[in-house]
Image (cartoon, rainbow, N blue to C red; front, top):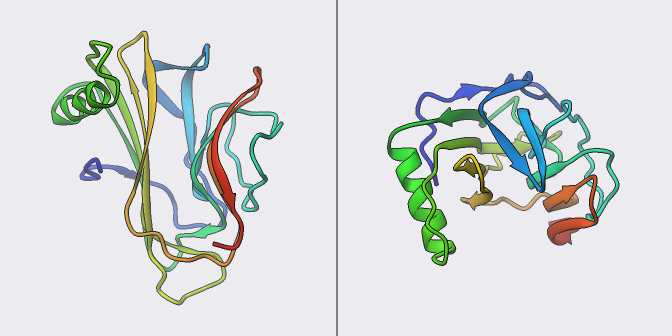
Length: 184
C-alpha cells in the first residue's frame, strides 16, 4: 500500500465525492486522455462527473461513464474511516510505483512520472455503526505514454450488500472486472 500522509480528505458525507481534481499530468485510460478525476465515497473513481450511486451494477455495464471501482458498495464514512487522495510527481511514491510496474510487467522498461493514489482507510458501510472497517486503494500510474491502474487491499469487512470490483470503459467493448460479489 502507498502512504496516505498529507492526503486531501473527502467530506464525511453519505454518497459524497471529492470535487473535480485537476490532474498534474493527463491520464490516458483506454485511449481517452483525462485531465480530471473524482474520488467517490462509495468506492470508485470517475472522470466526467462525480458519481453518487451506492448500489453497484454488474460489470460489464453501460453506465454512460468510465468507472474504476476498487470496491464499489454502499460505503459510509460518517462514523469511521477516511477517504483521501494525493498526487505525486516526484519522490519515493514514484520510485515505489516504478518498481511495482516493472515487477508486474518485466518486459517493459517503465519509469513513473505521475502517480495518483485514492485511499479508503478503515471506512464503514451505510446505515451501520457496528465498527466495520474496510481499507483499500486505487493507484493510477503513468509515464506520460503508458498508464496503469493498481488496486491494493487491506482488511475487508463483510458488507451484506452487493459489491462490484473492476473497470468499465464507455467507448469500447473493454471491461476488466472481478466477478460481482453479491452480499459479501
